[in-house]
Amino acid sequence: MNCPYCGVSSDVAHETQEACIDALRAEIRRMRDVLNHVRSVAVPGSLDSEEHEHEPDPAAQDPSEV
Image 1 (cartoon, helix red, strand yellow):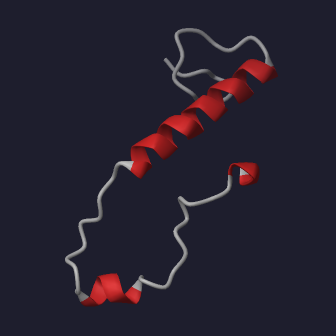
Image 2 (cartoon, rainbow, N blue to C red; image 1 turned 90 degrees about the vertical axis):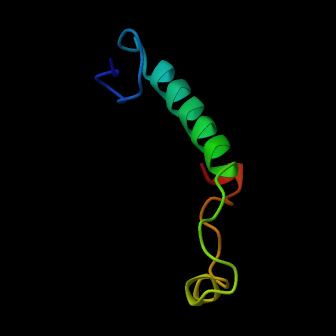
């Protein structure tokens, strides 16, 4: 089941806005951990990897940006 207020998976609806915020922060941490372990499927030296080489990594944000 998902909380009807914030959409985060939960056994029951969160009772307060603070509980929803805590659940959302935990979900963000969980997703960042998952993304930190994902490996690129680009072939080294391919045109696609060279094309995106100079773009900033969107997953590398400061915690203050959340």
